[in-house]
Image (cartoon, rainbow, N blue to C red; front, side, top):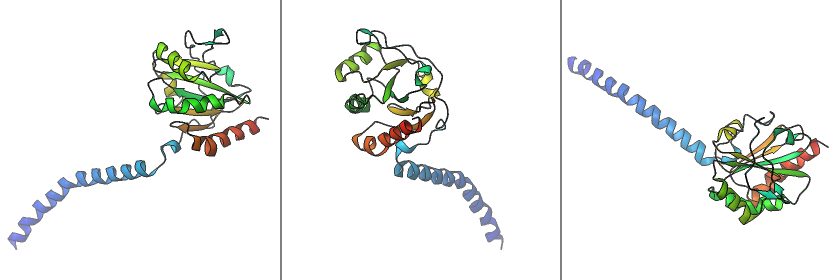
Length: 197
């Protein structure tokens, strides 16, 4: 009898000591399955349906368009126009991949393309746009990343559809690809264009 009662407390103690490890492993597996099985572009945004951040951003110095300085980001520019806002940087590898698609999108004059240049050197940003062409009617510089935090950016590139009322109606996390442009982004743009007409 004394042997059985003497062995129970050490087993219970071992179980109690292992409990945090078991809980941690369970949570780690849950996160791994949730992140590994999901589409990262479907991360929800708390800003959908809310006004676009009212943070003005300075222009990318020296970026010329039609012989004049391309303006920075003025939140008032969203009113009355459907906008596609892309957060990008020259050091971002997927940004290079999506640049030709943005150039194609810029040909559609039903909406405006706005760029937010994220934590980039001005020379590198200008060189990037010189290489691919500048699809943006406005380029705001977010040198310290604060404005991108207000936009709810997880990382570059990210793209937002802003309706005519200045409200964010859609967010795409990750690069624009031919597939998500056709199946997701353009339908969202068409929806925003119809909503305001």
